[in-house]
Picture 1 (tube, rainbow, N blue to C red):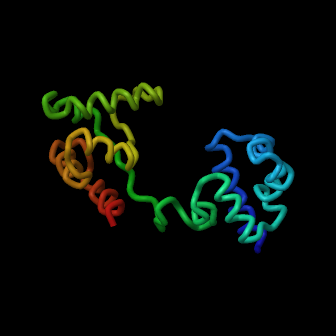
Picture 2: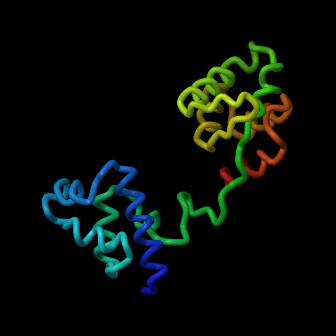
Length: 166
């Protein structure tokens, strides 16, 4: 295993561990000593090679598919990230409330959570679009077309949605 590959693998391992709110010692405690902090730390730094068997066991411990830990892969196996979904908040303000009310409330909630009050644009995630599609009782692609027609999303958003639905 090349040292660069080992470091990338280690970065993925560290990201999963920290997303789960675990310290290295927390991993050792949660695994009841099965995974030693010093060993997991050396995997994360890329100082120690991890066997396929141990990687599979570690993925199982973290509750993630093994492919999520492999360098060069992204969630869902996407080769490149989809285009960003950016809401035009200034145009959203001009869409009738009976149509845009749920979207306005959702955007306001995201702004509040992020402390992002620039008031011009707001980046949203694919998961946000899927949630909004449920709220609007539409598929993500139909909702995307609606938001484009309102002028709230750029036409590039179509690529993000088609990328997601492939």
